[in-house]
Image (tube, rainbow, N blue to C red; front, side, top):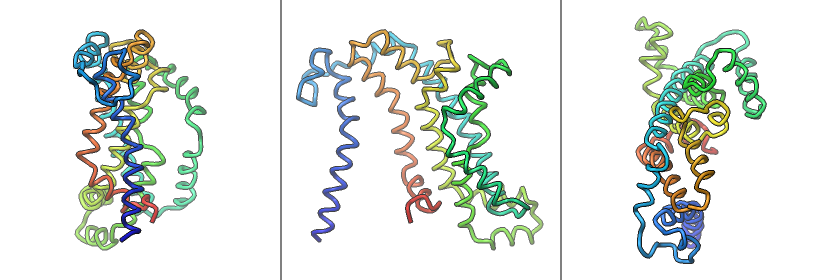
Length: 270
């Protein structure tokens, strides 16, 4: 009993430390500029006009739409190609499979900054700099982490499913698409949520690739707003809260499947 109480107290303290910055940002976005450094967390008179000022100073609606389009395209590509590669590495037998998978997995150790210049040169060669294609294509065809995640989940499925499908005359594609993939929904949701968060929060790649405001992302908009109105912290916090809301909504919808997918894919520390 005492051990359980201590556990809940510790978890509650960790949760409070994680939530406090978000609560402070929400409260600060409703304060006037001179009240931001007060000790009181809640504002005396909420300034809801800070949120309307964000949309007046910045085309945030357009930037939210741009980022959503990029996130949807990249997430769809990641889910499809990572699940396809994960199925191949988990279920298909071919020479050099394990060696190829280890080599692919080793790319996780390559820092992102090492690949930025080669990717930029490729985008410039294709003529995609400062276009939406530069935001969509590089992340469209899967990743080592996503492939590993889907491979781990495919390996947990019983072989009898595949054998029965083959006996019924299913091709390799039909086994993947119609039989096994529907059973990987938790892993697919985990990969989709993580990919969406990565694209939504990405700053370095849009900073290098995008100059036009009409195709800019929310992270670029927030930085540009900070550069122009760096003393107006409540407005900056209001913009940050608006950008954060879609991520909270997505995680709230998919949280049960997300946790289940982490546990069943072998990433939960078991």
